[in-house]
Amino acid sequence: MFDLCSLTKSFTAAGLVKAADEGRLDLDRPINAAKRLLSFPNERLNDDVTVADLLSHRTGITAGDLLWYFGQVKRGALLAAVEQLPTIDGAFRRAFLYNNILYGVLGELYPALTGETWESWITTGLLEPLGMTATTFAPGVELDVALPYVVTRRVQSADASAVAAAGAMRSTLDDSARWLAFWTNGGRAADGTSVLSERSIARMFDRAVAFGGASPMLLSGLEWAASDLHYGLGWFVGTYEGRRLTFVPGFVDGFSNVMAVLPDERIGVVVLSNVNYCGAVGRLSRAVLDAVTKTMTAGPEPDPRSVFAGEYRNQTYGNVTVAKRGSRWHLQYGGRAWPLTWNDGGAAQAVATVFGLEIPLPLVCRLTEGRPEIDIPLSLDPRLQSQTFTKT
Image (cartoon, rainbow, N blue to C red; front, side, top):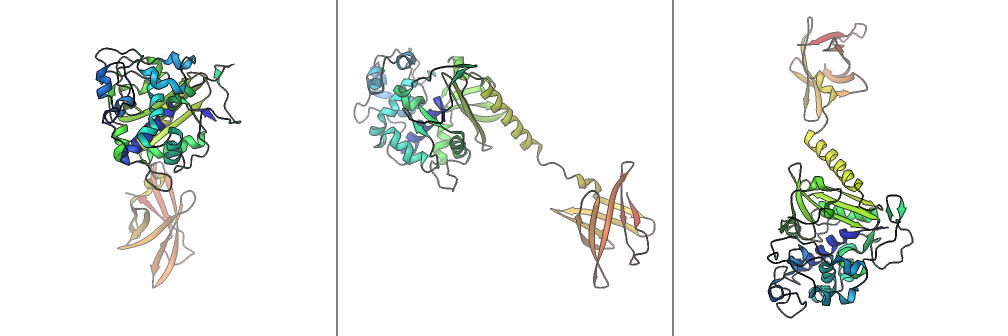
């Protein structure tokens, strides 16, 4: 079990977007429109902040991470703490201000927004349909856990339970691979069941706010993915080698993780590590994406037998042609085309129909000083040697 850190945000965001899919809430409606669910530092925020604003870190409210990190605010007191957090003038919907406390607050608002607790909604709506039976919520009692390190020094695990919906889930690599496949498969489970609409996934991967002057610590080891960087709903959105890239990094004491998706190609990578701010997660992600996209660009490996395709000539028997039609090879002679199958090395066999009989013709293909030649026994007398045909 690895601490997922901020990969948890992708679950919290997906859960609320799923609730919107089902008509339980409007992501773009002010969160206090029906009744006051949350008090913000000023009246404009009280009147205008939406779930989408909270999910995209564009409220203009500063982080306050030291409050939860040092235990000064507990999970039950998060809602009251929001009103006391400083804001930056003019930043509402204009600036990206990463805020773990506000994601934790969204977890506490799940009952009002979805009708269920954060843990219950994520479990029944996402984990169970995807078969993610090993993924848990903090505080847990898991026994088989990855131990946190800073380089080679063991450290104490951070207690993120106060902002659980921001970074307190745990999972295995197998379960994380299922979560990755969910995003590369257009919001469908392995059995094809739609769990989240592709329209909603497109909304989550859309650019909601520019990254701007946010702390570079958020991209530790992922600077390669920072071209044209924005934030969507729970996901960073950028460009990788000219391709659209979405990713979620996760960092906390002794753990570094990343999940990256190329949504147009529907491929991705997830890396979990138990080393603090480990640049290897970014390098591994880049190496995998480089390898896969290079293969995609290069296309399939050429068929080495293709060098023998073409027309050949023998002084006595005239011309023959070796040709490939689709995935099948043929030997053509005298207006007839006979199926050709390849054996090991340069050996092949055609089956010619002569006098109503099917006659096997074993071929030997070779390169002589770089020029293709084929030996073909075009005689019905087995005592005669094969005839050599040279590519014209």
